[in-house]
Image 1 (cartoon, rainbow over the protein chains, first blue to last red):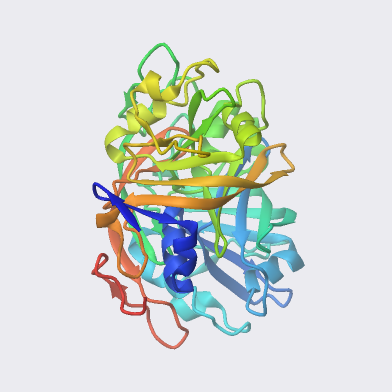
Image 2 (image 1 turned 45 degrees about the horizontal axis):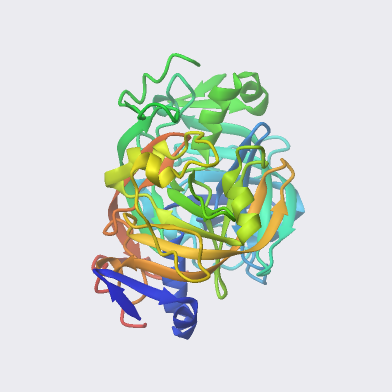
Length: 226
Length: 226
């Protein structure tokens, strides 16, 4: 381990020598701040499940698609099993005021236990053919259907999902479509177990080579070109 | 568009009726807070490139792997072309104090222009067989090699990358491996153009069904079980 100024350098060989838990905490931190999502599913009997997922990623807006990474499915993989069985799930942003309740959903409850009941969150949005529960307490939530299940080299699954509907805090939506996640109270995650609130630094204009970017301070009024 | 309390609901058909820019701003926001990364590459002539990427996701720690989503490669896809040609890139966390410089890297500079020179950032870490430049100003940076290039249903590419080395602000590293990204000054992105700093809410204990989670306040002292 060598140090330059106050930077520390780790080679992959050094990281591989660490205990697996220490390495997991470090490498999970290194990808940067992550989305903080509760994924809601239902099994075919209608038992609800909620799990904490920090690997949601935007794939595209036309069609509107999201991705998420799920660990290799084992006996406890209720989210994976339910999503494969029903084709549906919900994404619910974890709120800064209820991060402890949300984190408790990562405990290994038995299959027949609903995390909603166990941690005290409220299911909503189940009607007609839509069986995957959303979280009433969440200010940004959406329903998605499974488009593709891709197995990655490390045996994790990359799930490609189509957005079907969205419910979002009306006061957080700018005229130009931008959603102010700070105003909606969404949290962000770092590492395996760190939760954070955010402070808006600014929205920047579309960058062009011949002029410096400008800060757009007035988030909720937004731009004119909607 | 129907409203319940102060939530607004959009069906996918309604979203599809929006202008493509408005829809892109909204759907990019809905995935939650995102990592804020400058990806450094070099072409085979040694010309450096930096691009803003907000789709970096953690894949696993053993082996240490990251993923990132890149748009369908067109003429301007310097990052994709360089990564395929050299097999190397760097990830550099964007710092809260230089988000404007970082965002300026998303302008479409010609292929022969180095974004380092154009925006005033400092390349580092290029030595021997390692050609992909890192960003001196970044307090969390790493070198990665291409493991797999997966084409997604929407024609985007999901790049699977192996971590080879890491350099991180020594004062941000906890004894148990957790890296305090707030202490390292890493920013987070929302939507297409929103940048945010963060405030630590707490680290939570490993969740178990039979007891509530506990907050671990002392981030940099960390846990005992390293």
